[in-house]
Amino acid sequence: MRRTRSNSHRATASASSSASTAKEGNPAARQHHPLLDTINESTKWTVSAAVFTTLAARRDLICAWWVFGSILAAVLCRALKFALNEARPSTARKADPGMPSSHANSLGFLAMFVSIWAANTGTAAAGTAAVSLSTISSINNSPMVFFLSLGIPALGLFLTWLRVALGYHTVEQVAAGWLLGSSIAVGWWQLGIKKAFPILVQRTELQFALYSVTTELPAHLSRQTTKAISVSVRSSVMTSSPPLPRRYLGQTGLEVSVLGFGASPLGGVFQAIDESEGIASVQAAFNRGINFFDTSPFYGDTKSETVLGKGLKLLPRDQIIVATKIGRYGQNTFDFSAEKVNASIEESLTRLQLDYVDLLQCHDIEFASLDQIIEETLPALLKLKERGVVRNIGITGLPLKIYKYILDRVSIGTVDVVLSYCHHHLSDSTLETDLISYLKGKKVGIINASPLCMGLFTPQGPPEWHPAPPELKAAAAAAAAAAEAAGASLPKLALMHCLQNEDISTTLVGLCTAAQVNENCDAALHALGVVESPTAAEEKKAMEHVVELLKPCMNLTWPSGLPENN
Image (cartoon, rainbow, N blue to C red; front, top):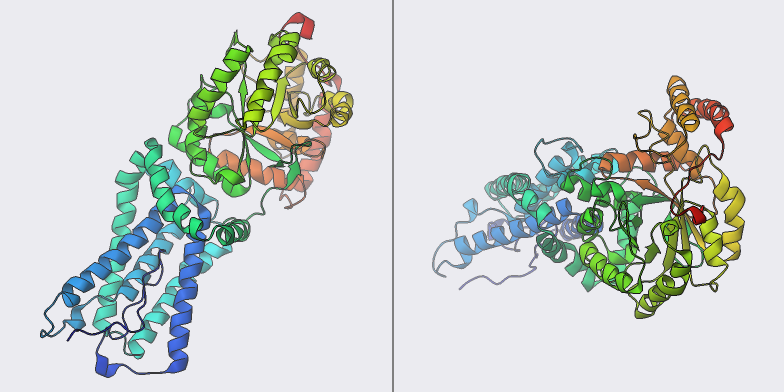
């Protein structure tokens, strides 16, 4: 008769140890050692839980691919065992010495997976889709990667030896299992980078299907536990740096990261971008603790919303805050009518692949009649808010006087958030001196944008179209040279300056690559004293010099929009 399965060890859903049946090796050789049996079983399940939790918490394409591969490896090994043994006639002798151990198979897969994962960097494996590698770079400096790359395979070898010692397997079985598992892992990785990732990057519905099977389904089975573990693992394991601090956004109840993801570069506003690299930057930002993402249909003629939507699709909706805009659709194309508001938000939701946005903003209202904003646009937005399509309402623009004009004429609570740009940076303090106290009195949250003043505070200088007066451009160029001479970076100094005021909930920075994400997140942590900057002394000296150089041009600005709104 066929054997019965006692103490069956089911393959886990992760790239972890998949146990074999209790009588898989030579039954006569099977020894009973209660203590070792207990260690064997408990350790396997501990490793399985740890690896699966790490992968599920990561919530990105590459780990979803590995989880799916580990499931496939376990299923293939079980199928092979069934074909070699279970399907044989009951009178036949079992080919035990040549049967691969499913336990060793899964450990072989896991060991190879960890080795590949730890060996890669954000720029390794030329030709690999950016979305598959960008998030690796954010963990390569973590001691946990070193532990995983050495500790888990070592533990796997110990468990394999233990199972041989206990009589579960023969040496031939575990050798075949390790060879099979590692071979599947290498093949799975090559299939991913050469075939699957290029397709998945372009087909978001396939990404979502893969992600749902490998992370959403297990999370659904234990939602609260998974969420708690996810937060813990993400903050303590998956990055070598602490997560970004957060601040409340006015009275909205939203707690936003101090650094926000400005998505205009995803639309190719400043230069052409690689879409897969842009998607990867969204995931990298989330992994570093950025939870606020801002876009507009104006950025890149809707491309920014489209690319951002593809990146957001792979993130947990309840852990991100998404803002977009209405009203501006081209360099000189504006429409703040109620009809356009309703059509625009539906189109934006489709591109973003969302059911609602956390914040919908009137974009650059200085180009419109402010009375129309009050009498037509805001009432239309309030109706959307009642429907739940929009959670909060905001207004944006350059001239500071537009905010007081609007807020003095609507009831408190109509406008939840103001987004001001180019008025809180190294050469302009008017947002602080002229508006913050007023906005707090109106219970309005404050977003600051363009800490580099639209490229003014960069080593290469602003683009030709930049509207700043010549004297300000000259002073900024001198400041960039002074910062470089002092061994500091002017863009980093500019960002550090903007993050100091705690009344400003978040500062938007334009991002489109994982490298930019990491650079700016590091600067933010240095600015807030969460992590000490290795060049703190140079930056302090450079900041003093830069401030002096810019002082003659302090608060110089330029007109924008209709003359009556300036």
